[in-house]
Length: 97
Image 1 (cartoon, one colour):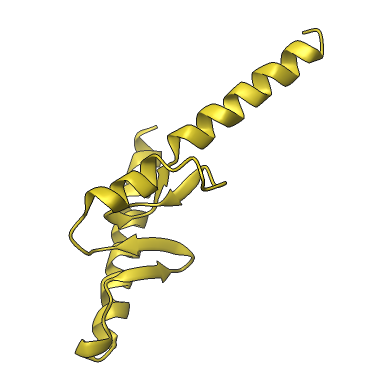
Image 2 (cartoon, rainbow, N blue to C red):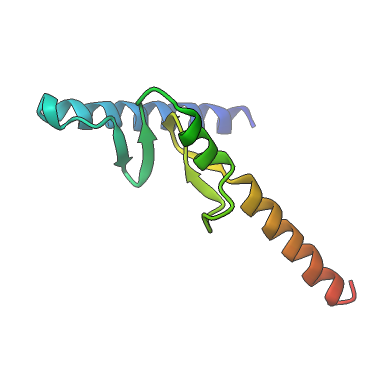
């Protein structure tokens, strides 16, 4: 488990560095400080309550994993996760298990 933690730490550090390098490679007026790098979303803008809510509590979004409100990676859309969990439980009970 310790090796996995080290791997995840170094991977997130590398993606963060790549995201910053990508932004700094753009002209200053074109820097947005949010986007994707290597398929991983990033957002280095100051967090807002609306972005936090969209990342973690957005029942209208069909995705379970959504871009984080700040930082690198994904957040868990809790209403969609609970809905999926509920659907799985119903399906299991319908199977007679």
